[in-house]
Length: 123
Image (cartoon, rainbow, N blue to C red; front, top):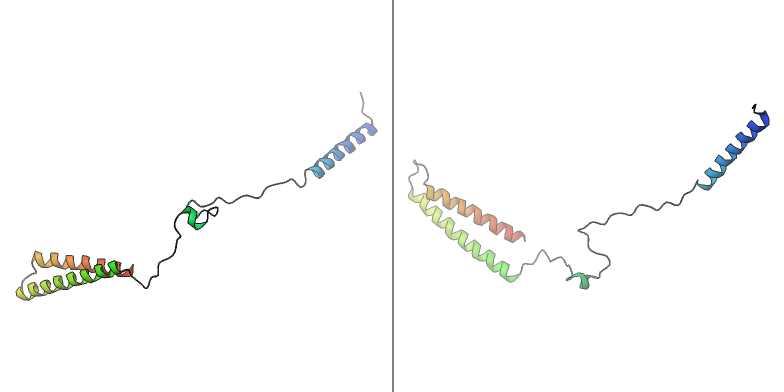
């Protein structure tokens, strides 16, 4: 059965109309904006500071508590005693010979204690 020009034109116009109507209906779909994923380490904004735990306040870096000051002073005294002992051992040893193991161990002790005092003083 032969198709007339009129039926082909009507079919083409109908198809074009359907495409135009479909694109007009779906041209602006409602899309929700992506929500950021909260960090697990971030504070919970739904809780005031008193409910979620104690108030988080940064300590004053210029002040040390009295116990820390006493610890630093005790460590410095211990450091002074170790240095004095090391000095005496080095003076007793012969200058031309190698240092003894006890002198090296005492020097390591002094280094370790000095690092602890430095770290404690930083906070």
